[in-house]
Length: 287
Image (cartoon, rainbow, N blue to C red; front, side, top):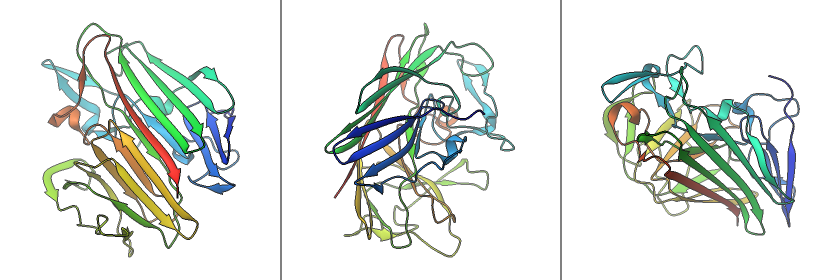
């Protein structure tokens, strides 16, 4: 992948870097302090970005295949050597800049529905807007096909993580997964890894424990607190929160999503009629 062009947004104490290839946020700073993990100079992978969009599905679809209207739909295996399809098309596609000013960037990504891949035409619109209160990212997916379309959307922010970081949010049960990271059909209590709903939140588990799980029934708000302050998250249109906290001490992802992993196979994907739009927004601030 060639070097990615970047755009700079500024408003008050906030500064963001936008990379149209992949529809990425490359960095988000408040008063010169990183709120998200910044994309390093020369990086080309969306997985090294501060945030990327997930559209038209989130997380994994098992074996890159699902049934729709009694017909098998095959997707590209887009994260080799993994056999599943992951995170949709948007994060690996070029986005066109449709609007740009000092504090706002709106980008679009289109898919014509041609095989192989997602057999529905759609357009996705992502708006990144800075204000004195912080950064709001809005992702919208519109069905351009002539039949009902599954409409999965989410955001994959890499937040600042430090040894003292504490995470706080409220949710319902956690979706249990097997070794292949596909839901097993079981659930775990929301405090299985740590009691993130406790007053003041909880530290992330140590000793090699990896969290890569979806928390159902998310209340739409979360906090990440460290010695530099508190990062606030407030989402709309996202009923679940996928928490990714691997052994890598620089990675912490709190991902607002509108469906569970592998929902294309197990049910629960939102559906939109021709011409309809599904949207989700995430507001990131500091205290």
